[in-house]
Image 1 (cartoon, rainbow, N blue to C red):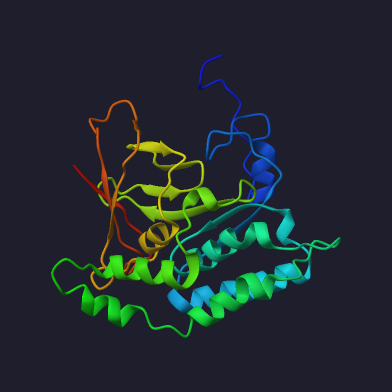
Image 2 (cartoon, rainbow, N blue to C red; image 1 turned 120 degrees about the vertical axis):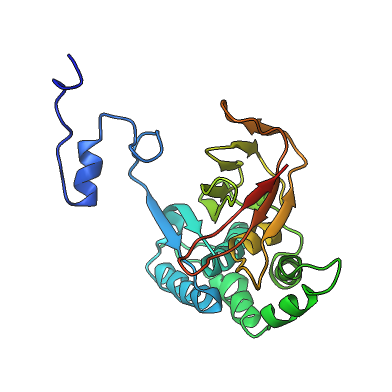
Length: 251
């Protein structure tokens, strides 16, 4: 049967219908099989987004939905909330109804207190000095107030937390997770031990004021066939006027 003779995929306007139409094929988005899972996406918007998503977690917890989550993806201010949830996940005490009885203590409280800390102005001013960067100061503040030296390897296996950015060199989306950090046009790092504070500073950079984050990948980098990349630095800005989030590699 030729391509012209092959039956067309049924056209459906609703998302679930689209999944059903693809049930016998590889996932049209990621190349894997579509699974019946619940995911949570936390979008950007600075401190306002951070607090908004904290409120969303409270509501989801009231309904006992948090243990049902399998994927949590975030960017910018949403990544701050996701990072706090991820590092606290193993300490959450869920009751028989799936409600975390100590969510306020472990997640909401730290986020609310951090919302009273001014980070951006100090980071921008210090970034004007030699040997300082605004992004570096933001990462230090995240680590000092929220993450205490945690790395991507301190996140739980389930749910999987993915922090989003964009590779400025390729224009492709960059993903940070416990099991990998990758740009599909360049390559990946398996089980990266990057500081969570740096990852979230990358996701929440805002050029030109909060500068791109520069990371040194001191581990094996698996290069995708067809590229000539052998070693990578990463620079990552947050959302620009159109919500772009960046990571830029430099040889």
